[in-house]
Structure formats: structure tokens, C-alpha cells
Image 1 (cartoon, one colour):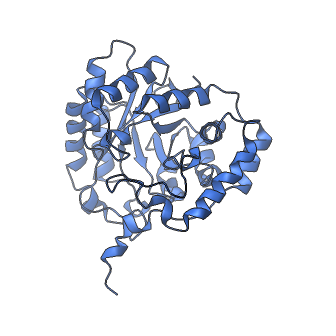
Image 2: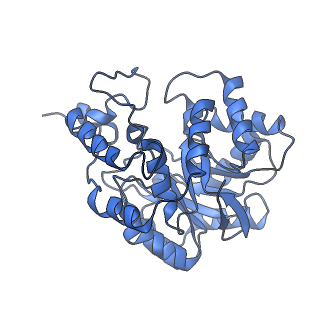
Amino acid sequence: MRYAIYPNANRNVSRLGFGAFGLKGVFGNFVESEAIDAIHYCWDQGVNFLDTARHYGESEAIVGRALEAWSGEAPFLASKAECIGPVSQWGIPSKVEESFPKGHITKEVEDSLRALNVDTIDLYQMHIYWPNWGVEGYWLDELETAMEQGKIGSIGVSVPDQRHDTVLPLVMSGRIHAIQTILNIFDPHPLDCVVPICQERGVAVLARCVLDEGGLTGFLQQDTEFAETDFRAGYFDMGPRSTYLEKVEALRAFIPEHASSLASLALKFVIKHPGVTTALSSMNIRKYAEMNIASVDEPELSDEVFDLLRRNYRWIRNFYGPKCLNVSELKH
């Protein structure tokens, strides 16, 4: 396993992190005992960073039960405060008073501590942040108070989908310790600006959607179907699915010379830049955890291949439109 220093805590954290979104059941049904086994396997293999959220259903509680049954070294735990009301990642930004009214973050911290059954959460994040909220206010004061009380170890924000630069004012203010943002081969844009500035400022970068909801693994076929409850239902069909498949197929030119699989190529791409602290991936299914861990242990990509992927394979698109904008509800 590869490691990076988490700046605020001066602690080694794994470059591959356990993303607990899948524990909400968004990628299909799972057996809790098997999921906990996968969590323990990851921790045993050195994956010591885990990211969950209040928004992820029973995820925090499941992680709490995994912790209760774990006798090894405590992992680095990250969670997030859930917003109140509907949240749009692409539409008009909400007011902070609407998404995080006074006292809400304080309550969320307490609820997370109770669900996880821990005394301290290493990183607590706001599940969304808009720059019109500024770089100070009661919402940040509540997080800093929780940190002073020892209830959280550091403060972070999750960046709205594909809106990487919106967090720059907060990063440059010096008042947060981590950001979480989408970063993958198709969307390497944070590498252009956000990641280097975070690196200069000593702010951790948590990369999410590193496999683009699994699309970058090559599993998707023209006839692949998803259950209505699956988060990916419709995700790959905002444009012609054939276009997505063509983009993925082009990446096979790098296999097996530079990576053992498409998934390996995607993970190795994200952790190549030293400014990326950890790449979060859903690993509640053990076979996927095994594959991801093996990928990280492969030799890193060469600078030439990394630059080629970063420059020539970026693909600007919005696959979140109907989910976030409620297009089906619009009146024509």
C-alpha cells in the first residue's frame, strides 16, 4: 500500500481510501456481514482511510459496527454533515442559512459520533460548499468549536460535482484542512488548479468518483441494465451510451503495458500526482477491494503516460443533469 501525509494530523494515510457510499445500497443490495468483512480486509491490507457521510443512510452505523469488531489499529475516519432540503450540484447555489442553518452542523457532528460510536472523527466535512457562503461565518465557527472540543480532528468540504474551482477562496483562507472533489481520467481538471494550490497550502485532497461510477473499469456494455434503485440507472445514458463506450475503449491502448486493467489505469492515474492525498473507491464488495488494492501496488504510471492521459483523454460533460436539475418535473 502507498501512503501520503495527511497535513493537519501529520499522519500517514493510504493513497487508496474506502469510500462508504456503497453502504447506502446505491450500487445494489449487499449483505452487511460481507460488507464488514470487506472493510476489515481493507484495514488489514493497510487501507486506513475511510470516508462516509450522514447522507449515506446506514453507512455510518455499519462502519461503527465494523469498528466495534476490529482489534487492529484505528483507521482515519472521515464523515460529512448532511444538508437540509434539496441540493442542486448544477443549478443556482443555495444560501448557507438554508442548507446549514445555525446549530445544524453541531447536531450533525453529535449524530455522526453516536452512529460511528467513536469519541473523535478525524475529518468532518460539509457535504457541499458554495463560494457565496464566504470564508467565515457561524457554520465554520461550529466546525472549529467541535475541533477545539476534540470531537473532530480537522475540517473539510465536499466540492459540488464538476465545480472544482468554487472552493479556492476557502482553501486560500487557510481555515480548512481538506477538500473532496471528483477526479478521474475523464475529469482531470482539478489537477490544473485546485490540486497544486491545495498542495502549496497544505490542504489534503480526497478524490472521489475515481472510477467514474465504475464506467472506467470497462464493465459497461451497450446492453447493461441497472435496477431503478441503482445510483447508476441512467447515469451512462445522458448522451449516447455508445459514445461513453468508445471513450473507454480508447483507453485499452494502455493495457497491459502500463496497467494490468482499465480499473488499475484509472486508479494509478488519480494517485500519480503527489498533491492527491487519497483516492476514494467503493469497496464494500471484497473482490473489488482486492482488485483495487492490487492496482495501487503496481508500479506507478510514467510521467509521459500520465501527461498523455491528462491532456488527451479529458472529456467535459455533465452526467448529473436530470438527477440534480429535476428535468422530468419541469413544465413545458
